[in-house]
Length: 154
Image (cartoon, rainbow, N blue to C red; front, side):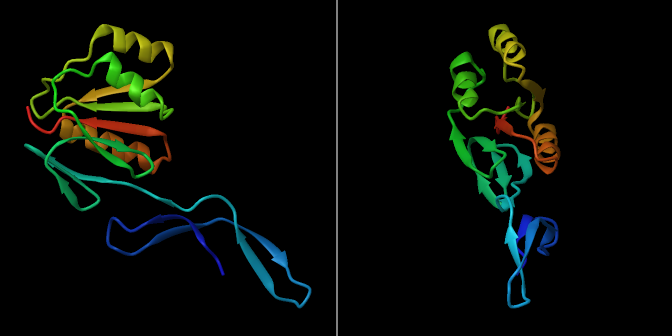
């Protein structure tokens, strides 16, 4: 039996697989395949329109956090990505944080957050929310530890 290491059914509901395994020969002549590494299912932000973010086919009518591992979490609505919010995300040990600044780009990021991101060597991207979703999806496909912070309205 071969177990897929990466499984993506987003595009056309047909699984894409990359097999990763170790082969062992059983004394009876049979070959056994032992999976190496976790099975990873990629998350995808499907769309973002005013007041709504669609993630893996499910609509959320809120600001959202989306993590590289598929976890999603509602975000307190607001127009500032402040230090407390940044520090909370650092606990997840991301390498990249993408801030969806809203459809009109109104979310602000204080200089102290920008400085701490630089000090911690966290790549910080700030884009209007629809573009932030595209950037997040590209990094997830590359296997990066990325978090999207999405403001769903202005």
